[in-house]
Length: 332
Image (cartoon, rainbow, N blue to C red):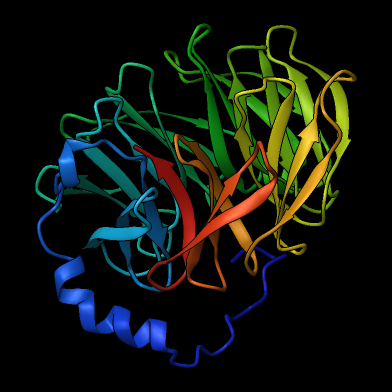
């Protein structure tokens, strides 16, 4: 359990929407990969549902759930292979990662990691899966073909999420309780450097267009900007309280940051010439966020929904009902 989060979710009262969703559940969990009407392609995402013990594939443009896959209790982190064929889902309380074949919607393998598998990251070629062990203060690597362990490296306390610099083969790890970013050589699984940042780094995103690394510092209420080439912290951006997620925008001079306590997405300038900051109200206790062709998609953990936001107009355009406890959003 992350210290900043409320210890329990509030009780959920049945609503007309939730009763309808329950009635439609057998249809919603049926065949995966349905073609959309007219053969059109729409933005889709996978979402981990911590309280549901499942993941859902959601058509963002149509605003509906396409399928639900049960994985077991309390899933959090996830990673999708570059070709979209396999979704890996971490179960911290079970000490395992579940591999789901997306063509069938069925779990094909369970990788026993031990410890507390939290953040998941695939190598650039999709052949290796890196997993942070929150309780073991390590990053562990597994071969995707058979789930065999192929390396591990010690990092700072409570490693959360990771980001990949493909060009340099480096992995950046947010060590939440060490207030630092660890830099790993992904091929050799060797710790290269550690950079001090603000209190409680959690979400982390690398932008290969600018070479900037962005780090959400939960208890500091800020985002650090790091020059990934020089491994140097160049700026600290003030954002809303409890920043728990970061997404890149088409404009490389702004980023989208989730404020969990604020129930909002902040569009934050990272250069002096960027547009002014804007705040967009969404649901309760949002966390994961991703950029899709249909707009920004944020998971409202306490509202059991996704907010779809148009960053150009600065408004929420849709609210999509999900299963219980949406946490991490993975674009397809």
